[in-house]
Length: 161
Image 1 (cartoon, helix red, strand yellow):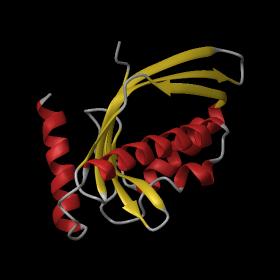
Image 2 (cartoon, rainbow, N blue to C red):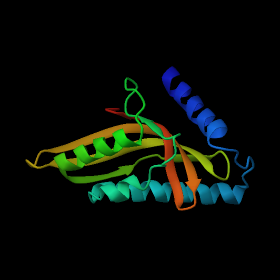
Image 3 (cartoon, helix red, strand yellow):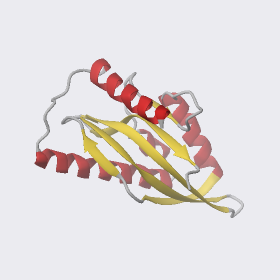
Image 4 (tube, helix red, strand yellow):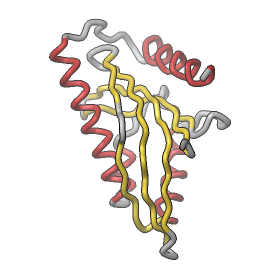
């Protein structure tokens, strides 16, 4: 829990102080629109992953120097290049992905930044027909760019039961 809180503070600090100033007020209507847009983006991300479209998957990651991701609490945060390698490996090993969020929540911080968290469930099938289920929690910060919302920083922890 301490690591989780520290990661969120680092995410917010990096975003707020390194990536430029953002509007600090968000109207109720804007919050609703941001929540809808972020949930739609994450659904599109998973859809692209499930259809093995690596180029489409990567378009959901921010390309700034601020981007990083931690896969488990024990890993060093990964930059964009490492995420590309990891996804290429995963897509090579599996022939089928499917999944859903069971309780995603979005909290707009500004008009261009939002935090999200939730539990995901992924069903896989490898080349040998072996089926599996991956369940985990994910937290992160998203940033709005000209071409839409992007993952900026976060943490994924698999194996949660």
